[in-house]
Image (cartoon, rainbow, N blue to C red; front, side, top):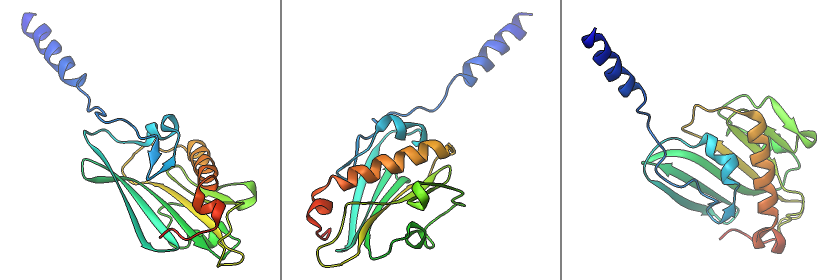
Length: 171
């Protein structure tokens, strides 16, 4: 009886040990505000969070969020002379984007979303808009409604940037 009790205590002690998130969920992703409460369910456990912004050309940039050297989130912005979010998505989607909002302005799934700004027009590219992408890379959590809220909030935050307001390039 004592052996069984000791064994149960040992097993239950092991099962209560869960990996934890030891970093703070960001409130900004490469300078763009993001609601950390909406982002948190998608963030993996781990110790250290780092972000890296890459501007490969003057019309686009990518922000990678890494947790313990693994890519957790990628956000992207791109000036594009298209009226269609579906065109922007092209081959970027890792899942079936089976949800849409605002007549196709936002396309999303349980762990990635794409959007189009309304008020951003590049001064040298007539008819252009900034398109946005938000992709979770290391989470098992899926929530299409949360992704819809994230991409809408993120796209609205992009519309409040100087790049959007002034219609300038990223670099």
